[in-house]
Image (cartoon, rainbow, N blue to C red; front, side):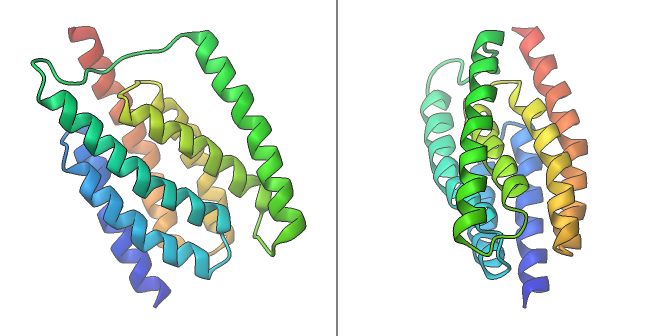
Length: 187
């Protein structure tokens, strides 16, 4: 059962990523469907932070769709953009603190598997998802790091299909960054 769910979720999430890189608004529907499938799977194997993360992905999917749809109706649509180094520092510092707290809570109160790594990848994924919904180019850099760390988490759980997807995500994060960088320079 877990293997079938893993395959379905991976395919949906891969379609999401390809459409996201192309800035196709339909990406959000595939992301939501893949996330709903992932919630159940991660909960059943004890990756609780990952389950929470995928609940967030459903919410950010709806937000991303709404944001992109609203901007799509305007003349130029939502454009790829940047944020300051100071904002990046504040985001990273805050995320580290929150991840440590979440990891500690899960370590002390649940049977969570690798609670700190799970918390770090989850919290930074929250940030990367929010930034990508706003088309902030550095979201791809966050994804490169998060996905590299997530490989370790999935390897520990023998989630080999998700592991393969995450390796693909690392590659696509680089491609997404380069694509969006090209877009940013064209404005």
